[in-house]
Length: 348
Image (tube, rainbow, N blue to C red; front, side, top):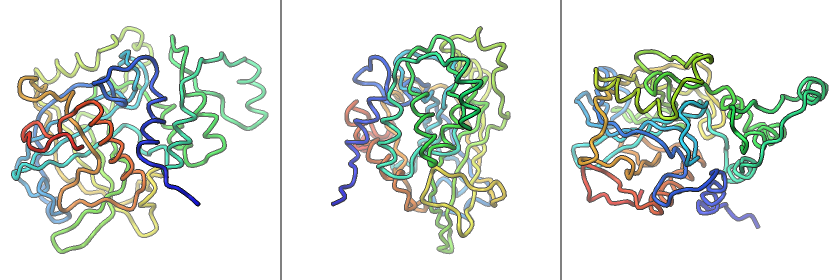
């Protein structure tokens, strides 16, 4: 008899992917980041597509966190990585809505079983230098991609194991390829972030549309030129953001892509065609670095299933599983739910 994989099993498997030591009160994913505060203002058309409070036109305060995707306790802003942007919208009734996004356009699993397989393949192992013969002769003859080139100084990695796993598991290939092509942005404010999961936006007329959200930087996407990477400090993204916000707010446009019949709405490992209708839903203004005496963003919990009236989950199995995993992780590190309204506690 088939028994569903539990969130606890998934969480335990994910922990094994974290290299080195890990502090008890830190995140198991996106370990290093920077908390910021700001506000969101919806576009004029947003309310015609969704009844959620932050799409009704008034300014909604937000707390957000930029981050590196790695769970490595040693910080490396200068290395290619999946970057993240987690945004918490604070509603007038003291509730909150979270939107979690990352620089990859797809997720690496479709089901809970897939998640375990990927996690097991990604367990860090000592890196064996790939021979010239394999890369230039054997791999081309076998019609397979060479193992990914790792940054200088990396001696332990889960990347090669994941690449080999992707060779026999098609669902994780797009994720692996995108991750392998990751670049280092000149700023957390100069890269796009994708929520990857499908949600259901409820309109004022009751129409329910499958949608996917993306944050597009108003200043445009710009990676660090390769020849400049060696000069970057391990914490340069934080220092750059502090300097940037000391001058002015940084902005992102929230794009909402609407799915067509036949699009994969329950599979986050696949992307939708770029020809799908996309609506400008509003602008996020990141105003300043969060002040710890007001809100400790490093203790703050974000959860992709913390949704408001007007935005519903799709049938995406991984979306719900991530919601459960985030609860476990938040409880383990003693996180808080909402910095402005402490009554929400740490349930998520």
